[in-house]
Image (tube, rainbow, N blue to C red; front, side, top):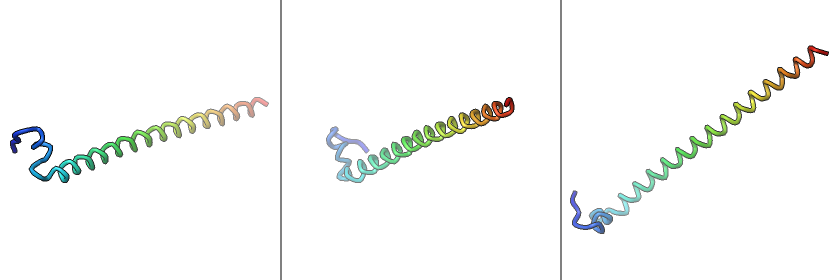
Length: 68
């Protein structure tokens, strides 16, 4: 489809609301997925870090207990 001007391009032959709405919904959904993935990943790494630290504390406590 060829447009004579930029304003005709933005109007999309009278279907601008549908076209740009679809683009907006798509980009919002992609941003949502990216942000959700980022925060979930960050949360999982924090949980893993805490679990490793807890296991290390347990091992250290058992070593201390065995030396008494």
